[in-house]
Length: 312
Image 1: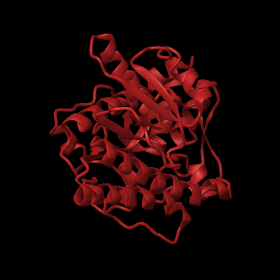
Image 2 (image 1 turned 30 degrees about the vertical axis):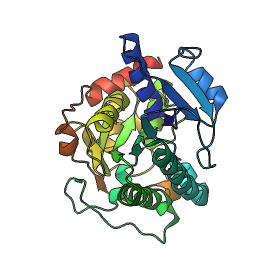
Image 3 (image 1 turned 90 degrees about the vertical axis):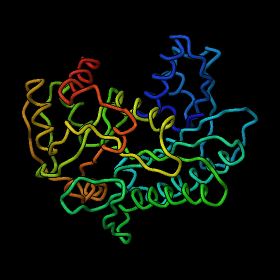
Image 4 (image 1 turned 60 degrees about the horizontal axis):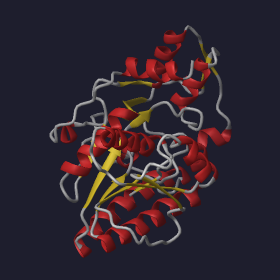
């Protein structure tokens, strides 16, 4: 059972599972999302397939399912910087309430739960790459902390359910994940890609010095499967491509060079600034995930070409 099924990460994870089904694996998939219209469009190729079932529900509302399943992937979350700024309360309620409901269901079904958290849980760094045992400063009096703080709390809730109720839970901490679904994404690199797709100059609303890890969504999907099947109960795993680390400015330059446009600079609006992360360097160490056997297959240059090629 997969929540947030229509989102970038979980929809790609479903694509991966359905490819296995095409090869003869019999995986029954229950995809949960609150927007049936978009889900039907996204999963049109699977609609009517006996191995694919859609459940229309908002995970923040309590629910129970009278169906058997062995694994759960909880990916439903507000991942929009604009929403962090305009609806911090809703962001926190969604992460905390949804996580609680899914953990209760995992306890009831005795299913393994994979919780998709975020690399933002690390907060501000000390200049080194983030390993899973690092915990940096997050200003809890800044409403922008609604996202990393609720993700941190949700992780603690996961391991608390493990400790108190014996729930089998593993945690994924993705870095900046990119893929074909750029039209609904308001993060900076998705905006760069939309501009490039349209043949327009890229608009950079900062000095671009922040450094980030990136990973193509197809590699992220395979990483989730490794964590789900091989991860150790109660452990968290970073998802990142160690060869895809660069500043926001360098990313904008790479995209601009790929399609032949220029970079323009502008001042962000007040609401845009409120949604920005203040963390200067967020590079995730993926060694623990790699110890499970996972390796990324898609370079940043190749990944960007794939995304831009899809929308040409």
